[in-house]
Length: 482
Image (cartoon, rainbow, N blue to C red; front, side, top):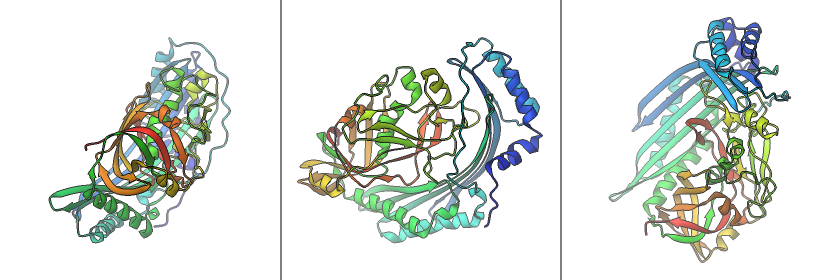
């Protein structure tokens, strides 16, 4: 299906303003109403989201969903105080009601003024295609049927297959008291695959999937084959897995999705709000060594078509390539506008929000460690006895202490420099900053994840990306069941 892709501002006009008779005059009235009191900044965040999802199990469509949401969030910032109101009605009256509510909340705010923000041009990292309209419904279901059939045919031990497909078309418009007016059209697709394999009385699960900011034609047969190989391979591997041993040992993390450990154990601790409040273990440590030499961690929202990328953040600031840790030295934090003002630095394009009904806060985009020079095979060969973690499931982290616990969904023992047998039930236990100082080898095989990451913070979820090369960490605690 050929789709006509309009420029972002034109799409915002068409979906968010014209149907409700809204114009620049309404923006000026609303902003003016808020600015009757001395506030540092005020903005309006308009959003239209159309989403669709399908799930397939046992060859049957289990669920099909379609939704449209729209609304506007109105915010005023004065010093450390933020006033916020939102409406799911888009009209001049609703906009003014929200503005008056924010004005009353902000009335008792602080009067500290901040310098105006200079907003550069946004990027063009992805097309404005509407993935919901990129294929007819029957072809979307046929896509799921195809990957289910491929998974079933891959191995006779596969007894159950579940597949899901999600699409989102998101249009946002930001209007600020500093004169900014910028829009973005954000497509997003994701396909997930879960495989259950059985041998004797034992059943194990494998997962795979991916996505990007594009249309459904992204899911080529080649990509579907990769997902099937990974999901079925993981399930079959776990059928042979032995109980994981426990104790302190050398751990090798595989490239790609294992970067989720970096995201959780280190990335959240580098977000500006935690550091401004002094609650992060990284607070006040700019310029200090926080990791081994060779460890460089970046957050980059400018990667084309990536799930975690954005042309602009949810405050209208262009996303950036932010170096957080450089050769082991802490260089900076991730900032939204409010925390950047209060810390006396520039925003980094990391102000993100789940929807118009939520306040923006500093969040990651695509967070990963840069490649080193080691051969991945040599990293494995260097380990006398240890654990190779190829894939991760869930995990938890404490921002204040940096302590984390992660479960490996696919892992193997390393003995005398060789990967020997698969293990299950392995958990990695440690401290994020401490673990970075224990990185002793970094591979040249940097990979980003396949496009499945979702990050939660203070009840808000946003799409993100992670990545890393193969790395060796010395002396990490492994929790096992053996």
